[in-house]
Amino acid sequence: MSINVDPLRLSKPQDSSTYLAIKTIQGGRAVYATRVPLLDLPTILPVPDPNNVDKDNRKVDRLHAKHFGEYLDAKQDWVAPALLARDSGGCRFEKLDEHGAVGYLTVPWAIGGVSSLRTIDGQHRVLGVAIEKQRITDAIAGVDRDMARKVSPEKAAKLQAEREKLIAQMTRLKEEYVGLDIYVEPDPIKAQQMFVDVADNAKGISSAVRARFDSYKVANRTLSDVIDHPLLKGRVDAEQDRMTLKNPNFMGAKHVADITRAVIAGAGGRISKKAEQTLTDGEVIEQVKDFLDVISNAFTDLAALTEDDPEAERKPDELTMAQRVRRTSLLGSVGMLRVLGGVFRNLRAGDNPAELDDITAFFKRLDPHMAVPVAENSIWRTTDAGDDFEPNAAAPIMRTQNIVHLVNVITGWYKKAPVAL
Image: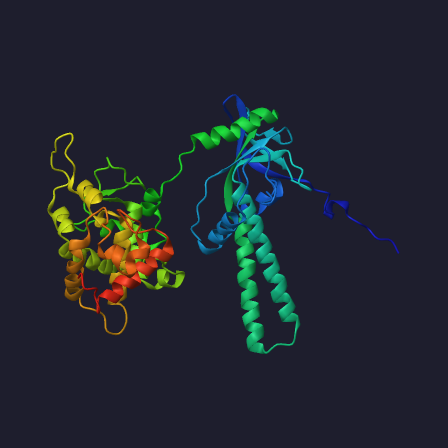
């Protein structure tokens, strides 16, 4: 019996992938710009090892990489910039037009840790995709093992649905693309300089800017409405995370988000994923503005700040009211405002929440004790709050355990205040 084998139907050994690319020049080097499936990243680029530092790059953080994989899974509308890589001479470009700008780019695979490509920027994305691919693969194998056992029809249907969901996740990694710019640079010394240049010229995003634009977090998403409150309007720095003495604003956008979280989840807590999904923007805005109303009415310095015109003309050496509060009052400390936000949350929680007027009246009793530096005979040093303030402090100790403790102490004063109040 004769067997006819068609060699054209047999897979040939493969050690590269080919993409459509554009060839340009940057800094005297050839640069190939292409788009590759997410799933191809760990194939064509070396997967970084968190336990071993690449001499041409920085050490990777496995948790940060894992979070990128989780981000891809959770966000259908994910976005990520192009990765940057350096080619030492292994890529081949076959031009398609007479100008040589468009063509087929053949990229060798990274096999056994050996690759002609080295990542300049994007290590965490490569590792994140590799971790996510492995997670899905392991999960599918686990479901298959469970399906091989004798299970009830209901259990079998649930397992099948879970398997289909995992397959869909893997398919997304195959079908969704990310940019990749490959710089041709055979000189390893110049390649190291490329990494330094990229790092030096990249301007990191501040927490204040992140708070303004990161719409996945309700504390950030509601920011524009919250800062419209009279206490904050025109007094929030949209760019800076730290308030220097010369900064005319009351606080930064990040600090507003911190206070929002304190009002919603407590001074030491974070808004859980479940709460993020169930809380409406309107609920959050209402609660935070109620808190801002309360402290604006309760504290003399904040009432004066609310009435001050932030755009009024001033002498060159004249302080804004926000600067005065930050220099002379505990209320100029974001930490203290977070504490008060946590107290407000505690008093408003439960089946029998305190009335806003009652909380305002309680906070008014704290008003005479807000001057800084904190005196040794003040309630912040002579009561249970003493562990949460350093001598001559202008703010509470910012460790989470101190913030949480101070919130509980002040909450307890609502019903049984110290004699000084």
